[in-house]
Image 1 (cartoon, rainbow, N blue to C red):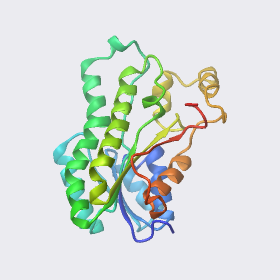
Image 2 (cartoon, rainbow, N blue to C red):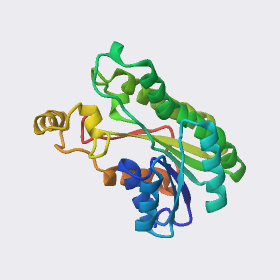
Image 3 (tube, rainbow, N blue to C red):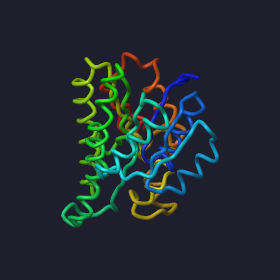
Length: 248
């Protein structure tokens, strides 16, 4: 029960890594607001998990939607101890000059602007409350970028730098800010990164991971739980690799 009595918002919490984080947080005693564009999936998770979870439809790239989400969290949870910026999108592998401008704009709106928007609305509340924890789900792509995913790589590199800068600025307010860099996992984004989901493509991908498997939502949930718990009270500005050795 490492998160007993804590409250948390998890964006993109209805699937993939977000769902793994939600399940782990609830198992460890937290009350969690699942924020997702897919309201049906979020409500299904609440039905599965029970009264420790609630849901809200949110577009993390839109300021009004984020403001409404934070207001809902304050009404539902009473306060926000933990914010997990997990919502993210990718793009199919392609030459860097081929990505359409509207796809680029959407990529950075969801992967980068969302961190700015949630910070605008949540950080003042955490400062007033005397502290809090922010966790950004970045990627190994921001540390060891692969060709043909240039703009996705860049968005995650942005998130890592933002995490470190936020950590330094917010430390005096007792707000810790960390990131997790997962290697590709069994999530809805896997096919996007690979371009196609075939046994041959999976074998090529797995050959780059020394431990020999993809990451799982449970792996990311476990790491998130530690970084958001009081056990990590001296840890801030870290971008933790959960990658099976991929970036060595």
